[in-house]
Length: 271
DNA sequence: ATCCAGGAATTTT
DNA sequence: AAAATTCATGGA
Image 1 (cartoon, rainbow, N blue to C red):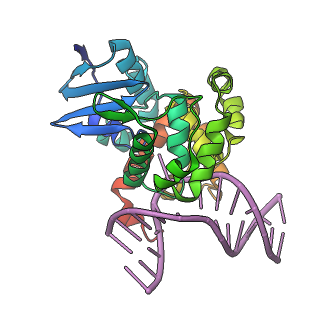
Image 2 (cartoon, rainbow, N blue to C red):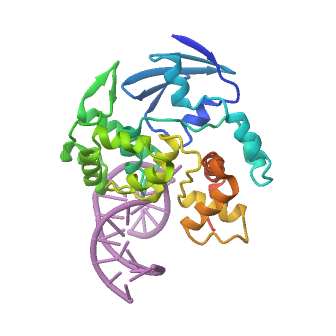
């Protein structure tokens, strides 16, 4: 058990913003099933009650480091972003387990959040690592059975998940985590089923590379609405524009833009 | 029924 | 090199 103060933090918004999939709801609290721990977290205003892991583990996972206020202050100077920051104040970037994030985001290709969560739940159950009544994803070095991955309804992604998992030994995982942003992105893109978008998701949500800017179909649409007149013809052009405009805060900006795009999806459907 | 979903790999211009 | 097609599956 533990208690910590967390100002400018919204647990629900952060967990349900599409960056993290291994959680379950339980009577107003969240169970986070990650990193070999089953963590229970509940927020009351600026107070966070937690159990199942150390305070340091919880703070790292949820992105509760200093620096958020400064990042928000810098991004608020952008008149386009300022209203989004006000609306979604407390939305943070998590720092997840690298191996779990890679598997999770391979599942994310051409999918949706509820289905990704279902895939990972089935995969964890199929691999059988139960703890505290919850099933955890297999750790690095545990070979994945293709039929089990396939039976998790991962579709055409199953072979990528198995093949990527084969390559993800502790040494490669360490090299990825120790690398700078661009090199980490390159290494990740070398994995089966990992392209530039998923590599940026991993860089941002697991490795803490604040300049990473994953461009999915929603963010691309939103960027073209928010910045008409700019050359945002390709995903790469959008990413470069964002990195030039927001630098190492680009990733946080992306998270606000993605949230806004989700909320206003119907209105943008015809773009 | 038909279409789309936080893309990437493969094949075809 | 750029553009089109394919890849499973669940939900609307």
